Image 1 (cartoon, one colour):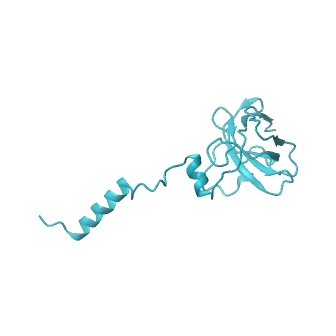
Image 2 (cartoon, one colour):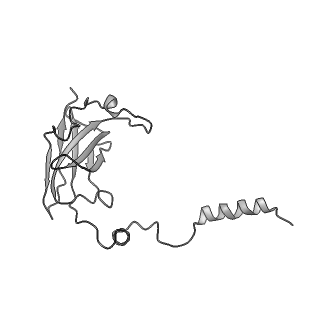
Length: 157
């Protein structure tokens, strides 16, 4: 039986897609692998998370933005789950953030869509909590001191 060249190429390509191209460790997301990719050492982080209440209720879809203490640099982002919980991540999911002082800003966009270009129009907080220079929410993280209950209470109106 003779298999046409085109069919054999499709078969080989499909096989490679399914099996991958070898054991390079590219799918290894361990701390050790990430440190190797970063050039030796990962930043020392402290687990920080909590819950966001909007008008007294836990809400999904609240975006949290972490800024440097002077408000000039965005250093992290998180989003609340269905029970209103969030956690900060640096290298791995919910591993934490570096010790230091930060400003925290918020936007409430319950049904975020990929093609939404005007976040301010969708923000149910109407940008009240989004300017890092005007927000009143400051976060101080001490080295070696996890903070699992950094909660925020916000209002839509």
